[in-house]
Length: 299
Image (cartoon, rainbow, N blue to C red; front, top):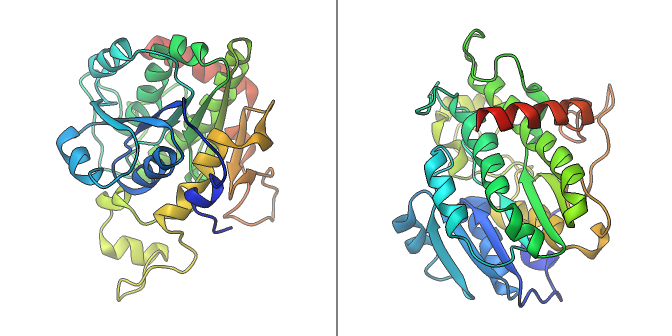
């Protein structure tokens, strides 16, 4: 499925709606912002590097504002959410880090879990009243096929006793992103807040910055000449499922689901394609509730 974000939004008028896109100034985030703003939404880009964001977003047409947000810094998240005013119709939790060396934030939290999941968890909690005021908000949590690498370890989320493995940490964080959408949707329905998680597809972006060329060759992402695997999507195509979940009338009355290729994903079955479908551990309702409880304690 190779639709682009602009194709998904064709014919939709988002005038009067406000959207927030974390990390909306590179890769998928940039194309997500470009599509939403082009359809008439007012888009707030939450950026760890506002100066860079201003440069990258300079040619985007529409109403776009840039505000500083560092998802690894709880105080930065609080400043962002406290200053946000008015109804928030769309929140796309797009920003992420992937497969980086072991790094801990000021609290001692492992960086992939802290940034990819806990930062967005705190952000949603801080913006809850804004989402509620929209009377029909949607929150999109970007997961990944990487969720297949492992479920969150709620007894050792920060690799304090488990030997650190960068890919296991990424898989756990991406599973947490999917589980977050499950419980967020369950808790948000009373306030007309619906949540979705998304596998955008394989896309070469700045997300791969921590990976050496040799590792990407070994993974089959590029060949020895640097030519990209033909299965990869462009950033414009990768942003399509995010904006589909955020806007599609087909999803009215639905939520808490994992989506890929602008469709609701099927449950992965033994022997099925390793590259499609959602693993059961990433949509488990009990695990989602337990992760929420732990996240509340941690933030």
